[in-house]
Image (cartoon, rainbow, N blue to C red; front, side, top):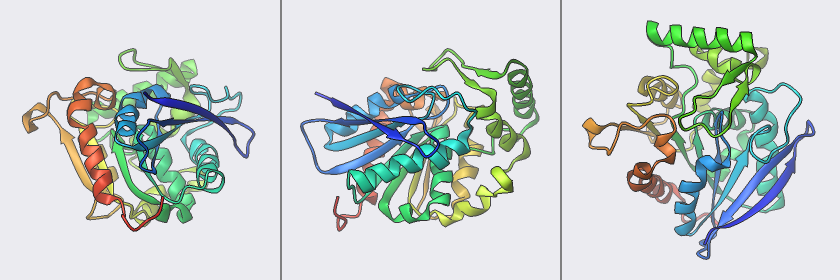
Amino acid sequence: MLKEQLYTIKTADNENIALWKLSSKIDLGKHIFLTHGAFSNKKTFIGIASFLCDKGFTCWIMEWRNHGESSKSVKKFNLETVAKYDLISTFNFLFNTIGLKNIDCLTHSGGGITLTMFLIHNPTYKSKINSITLFAVQAFGAGTDVKSKIKILMGKYISALIGKVPAKRAGSIEDSENYYTLKQWFDWNLNQNFVGENNFDYLEKMQTIKIPILSICAKGDDFVAPRKGCEDFLNAFNNTENKLYFCSKENGNLEDYNHSRIILSRNSQKELYPLVLDWIHEKSNVNKVY
């Protein structure tokens, strides 16, 4: 039976971040950090966390500010805020308070973007991470054709007018995001760059992250995280050890998967969760002490 424990982490800008510890009776002393993307919270990971806990892992799921059980922020925030405040506070807690030595990471959508930005700003944590798994993660490759660019432009324009980005009901866990939160994502994909505050070039720095990464994307996710975008994002790390796994019926998968089903569905549980487990086992350093 899955055991849940909630920790509340205080950030430097005075927000309360929910960090969930999930475990089972089997405990191998190995840990996995998970964080979600927009319109989501810990529910995104209950399926895969249960799977991994049954295999003896302890899972730590961080919910962004204004999501799940984290504090409802009155301040505007964006993906960079999550990276610079929520993630650093959580990793400090895991390694300095809990005392973890090493960890594996698993993210979905914007969670992978924020993890990337966090590691670029906090390189001392790179050596503590054995592997990373990205589900449907890209930051600057969704607008590579005219049709997609028009959709992104329309989405940005309408969201700016109403002040929020409405959630698509299918697969969405939380209702909407503030326009300011996702403005960066719109701009990155329109401009084909990955530039943060003060013109900080994340794309240029991505190659400094040499942690082995498995990127999983799908044919049915043709707007938020299309194959080309996920491939370009993965290639920016410039690591031959990294792998891209593209899901489609033509490639023998059970379905073409959309942006949510790639992590949430029964089919993904059958054929994708085991891939993640194999990747973690392959990249775990047996000489490291957990």
